[in-house]
Image (cartoon, rainbow, N blue to C red; front, side):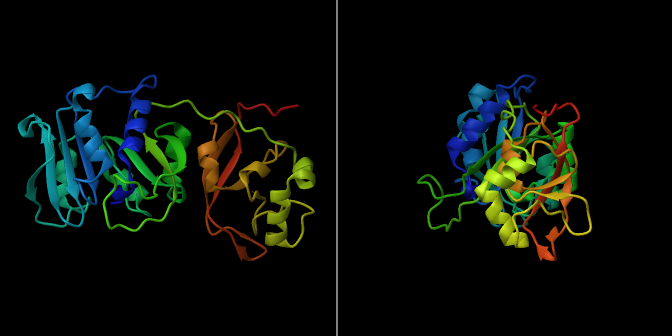
Length: 294
């Protein structure tokens, strides 16, 4: 797991934001499982332990990977994080031991391994979840549909994975853009993007013009993905307000997504323009309830 990268204050801010949203569940009497790198350093374990009285929690469990170290905080431990035992395995969340712990809790909170978000959410199905994940991991078809259907709600768009004093010592970090996903409460979405027309972008958007020259050698028009009618949009600021069809946009779109303005469709698999491979793209289109500005 990647919880060495998760600061205590980031977890605190997100959990209280979620639980303060309309329709959020109450956690009175709930048990929480935090699978992670080091359960004694994890911001998830430490936050839920510190906030147990305010949230009304029954028990907090943490599992270390690859140490297989199981810790608990509860009335039995006087709400301090204590080592319970070492698991037979290495603490992999997919192992039978950790799966049995999952079955005994109400909420799973973690930063899943990069590239395993889909697997983690499938594993945690049937429990409340709150996860921190890399923005580029939010490209799986099932996850996109869960976001579109409102089963999960996205929040964030920050570089949280940079060194902070409270994280574990001796660990090398690479800052990465991250987002939160949860089924607990829906923070207010960002305001709708203020967008220019296709012609306006091609004339005035310098970032778009430079990207088009890199991708196609010309800034005369928007390209489409090879073999499709999907408009390639190199940056979020270049989304045209007057295009009604499908668009391929960078994953940096997620933190700016307003569900009333755009509808996420599917990931763009191996997107190319003129044979040139592009970075990860999402497919979107204007929401059916959204009216284009005059």
